[in-house]
Image 1 (cartoon, rainbow, N blue to C red):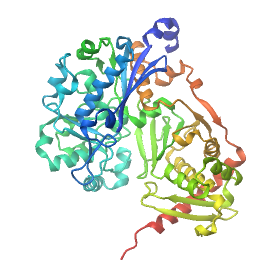
Image 2 (tube, rainbow, N blue to C red):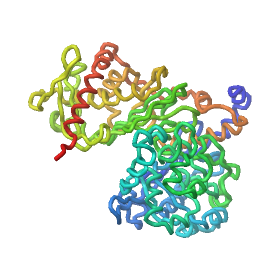
Image 3 (tube, helix red, strand yellow):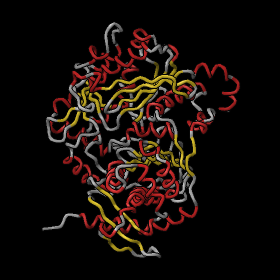
Image 4 (cartoon, rainbow, N blue to C red):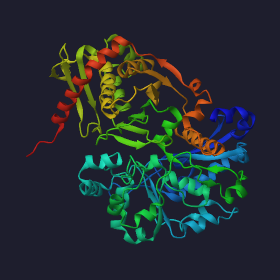
Length: 565
């Protein structure tokens, strides 16, 4: 039926889907993408430090005054909205052709609205800017806690104890307690500033703050981004009353608003302020915004795919299709609800030692030259003769609190390993060792995360700086046993534009149709390019090294564990 709707009205649909707007508010900047028939045709950005220097941010943030506190000024975000619209208009963007708006925000950041907020949002004067009308009176906190904040260690331990420990919290919400998560931030604010907390009428994530501005009313929180709060049951998509009461008291439910909503929902039409000031189409639909990581999944993959981001950190985003058995939850990874696909999930692994560790090995053993690094990788055999290297120049997250370089040698039958000192390792073996180590760590966890009897993963989509390296791509294909693809560079903001399009498309189809059905109509596969095929003989070698790798990692954890006394 979805296909027939498309076929019967193809010319009309092409016109109507000509423009979707995706907006991305990260820590560093606000970014907008306008798409036509899934192709990006315009991009604008406002960089907070350079374009709005009067707020005094460094990388979009303000550090302090309290220990571990990191915030961003809400007024800066509002001013960025005004500035990016000015830039888009100057570039010739016709706002009247935009039929839907969605996007993404940096995960975990929160906005605290005052009792006056709803009235102010719904009565904006088109002759005045957002910033001058909403700040400061619409907010009880003028600086929003963001993901870098680490001031809530006390609250993390308290929340975990209240539910039976870190694993119990991970089983319920998808993650153990983290300082940056919104639940701990709310509990801290309620404890140290009860007057402001009590004056707060609604609490938004950054991702729900943004559509609120477009709607002229406070928007509900979206299910995937709600997974990063330690407040929602990750399997039912409902707020958990015990956690709500513990973090914010019985009043927190009303402050958060209705139950979280899925992507593709039409929240309403754009508010009159946008129509009058910027000449938006009054019929433009506003859809829920999501977090930056789920939006990247939307942009670059489908259920059954894995995304490997090889940037400063190494991050795996695993799109898990619906299964009869829910995915397992762990204290070292995150499980998020999928933005568009009911009962699907996103597993996330984030490693601190990504590009930094690779670059240190390159500098020490390949004269700082990537060509030499690649040459040394290709000179060494797959599996590196059983050498297992663990490289942690910074204290790692997965596994937690390990640091330093450690080496082991697996026996020929892979049944035992023995420790090596660094001087026993050939200098030419390190480039392959670090790549194999980083990828084997991820592979060893994928097998545990995937539900029993889950269908095999379909493909690996790589992005980030190191994804341009053909040797790294091939090694990833061999370790993971998957074809490796690369896609466009737009990422999260493009995912937001697709969510906008999905909301509009579903509404035209009477609320029917899946995100995958919509994307299938685009020939989206042409946007993906296969850059590496797994080599079967190497895949077998790496499969046999997973267990020895796990054993070596456990020994590293034990060596790095603080000794009593």
